[in-house]
Length: 351
Image 1: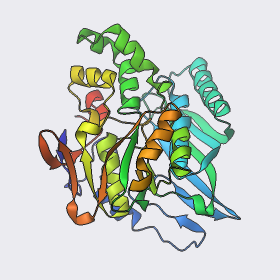
Image 2: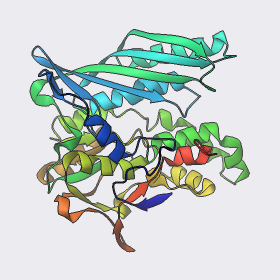
Image 3: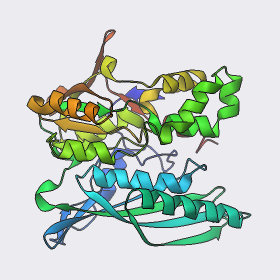
C-alpha cells in the first residue's frame, strides 16, 4: 500500500518481503569499515553497484537475486544485473550465478536455467565465468543470485547520487515493464478471470523483449552525449521507490509530474484488474536519469531516434523542497511503498 514518503526504521524485528527499509539499511551500511583506498564507490542507499580502482579503469561490481519470477529466471538474472552495471556508465563484461533449486527439481529445469543464462550472456557479449548450483530444501522455487562485473574509464563513472538541483528527470520506456511481464506470465489465469483480454496478456508477456527489461542501450546514450549526472534502475518498489532512492543517494529533493509518466496500457489494465499501483510495481526496463536541463530534450530526442521512448518527468530540487508529486489533481508527497506491489499481490511474507 502506498504511503506518504518518509524515512522509517522498522518498529519490531519483523520485516516484510522486499527491500530492507532504507533507514535500517543505512544503519547497517554505516558499520562497514572504509579502509580500502581502491574502493571508489562504497555501498550506500540507492547506489546500484560498487566501483573499484583497477589500473587505468574502474571495475564495477553488482549482485542481485531473482526471487519473484520462475519463468525465464536465468534470463532475468543476466539482464537485471547488467542494468545496474550500465547505470554506472560501465559496460557489462563478466557474469557469475548461484542457482538454488528446490527439492524435486528436474534435470530439465536445471538445463533450462543454464541455457537461459548462457543465451542471455551470449546475446549481450558477456562472458559466463563461474558460479555455483545446488538443490536445497530451503527454497520452494528456483532462486538465481547473479553477480555481474563490468568496467568503465575513471572519468566515465555515473553515480545514482550524482544529480544536481535543476537537473531534469528523464524516464525511458514507461512503467512497469518487468512487473507487468511477470504478472502476465505468473498470474494469467486470474487476470483472464478478471477480464483482461488475451491479446493484452500476450503483449505483456513479451515486455521482457519489447520494449525489453535491458536498459544497457539507453544508459550508454545518456552517459555519453546525454551527459547524465545520475542514473538509476528502478527495480523493487517501482518508479516511486527508485525516485526516492535517487533523492536519498544525492541528498536532494524532487518534483515529479505524475501526468508526464508513461504508464504502459497493458500495465494499467493488469494493475487495475489486480488492484495494484503501477508506481510501486517492480520496474526493471525503465531507466531513470538526471540530465542537465540544457541537454535534457536533446537527450530525449536521441533516445527516440534510437527507438527508445523517453520523457522528461520532473526536476531535481534542493533537499528542503522535499519529494513532491504534481498532477492535474494537485500536489502530494511522493508515494512510498512498504513493499513492492508484486510481493503484495503474491502475498510474500504474509502470515
